[in-house]
Amino acid sequence: MLYSAITPEQKRIAFREGLASGRIQQFPGAFNPLSARLIEDKGFDGVYISGAVLANDLGLPDIGLTTLTEVATRAGQIARMTDLPSIVDADTGFGEPMNVARSIQELENAGLAGCHIEDQFNPKRCGHLDGKNVVDLDTATKRIRAAADARRDPNFLIMARTDIRGTDSLDAAKDRAKALVDAGADAIFPEAMRDLTEFQAIRDAVDVPILANMTEFGKSELFTLDELASAGVNMVIYPVTLLRSAMGAAERTLEIIKADGTQQGAVGAMQTRARLYELVDYEAYNRFDTSVFNFQVPGSPEHTTQQAPSAVEQESP
Ligand SMILES: C[C@](O)(C(=O)O)[C@H](CC(=O)O)C(=O)O
Ligand SMILES: [Mg+2]
Image (cartoon, rainbow, N blue to C red; front, side, top):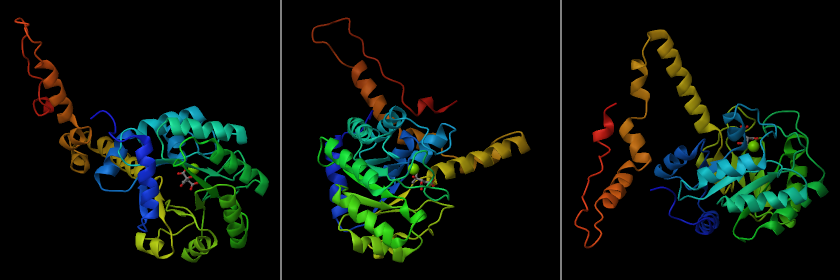
């Protein structure tokens, strides 16, 4: 009820343990706090909070327009609704190395288990689009050093993302990954790998966990969990998948209403009221209310007991 019963510190430990477990970790992207509950309910290992989803949800393109405050606030709202560890896309860290340091502390305060910081120039691009540019090695490593030095919880995971494969060779990506680890990165996110052998090459180049980004309509094929695990990948994100699914469903429903003059034809595909209430733990709030209403102050004769209405009674529109 209300929020997660697990502290951010515990979630960070759980995340570290998951990565060390030898079992590939699956982190679907939540597009809001409620969908984080769904991800937990379906048995995933953690929640990814995508910069693209955050921006697109505000109607903005994913080109570095969102601010640290917006990202930390939304990520915190999502992270606190789940017992799972949540990691957030911190883009280029929201500025110079000093700003990156502040970003890390804000994301720690917001209850995240970790974040990734990329080596793109500002304004950044989606990692799977052309026209990206990366900063030089010195700038990239300074961002990561600043991030690693700034955290107060040593278990807050700093992941370095490199977009260099979009502009340079696989060897360049391996060299950069190694340098980012030397600068303090706890994990590597090699963006826009072309195939499984490229993931394997990064795996062999570094001795920290690596992440695979299975975003649709991008440069990487949509590999299965087993394929990624066999290439040595430790964690996989499906960053925009739920937003795309929800928006696809919303479009279809709108078309049905427009065509039929009623949403009746779409109801079968909808999440039911009962399932929605289950996800927001409606019954637990009811029980809580009932116990408050029934509380007796010893020796107060005028105290009356009252029952809170049950969720089921409130089912009818
Ligand atoms: C992972 C990513 O950084 C994101 O913001 O979710 C994006 C996803 C996307 O645009 O499909 C990315 O750059 O890959
Ligand atoms: Mg992003």
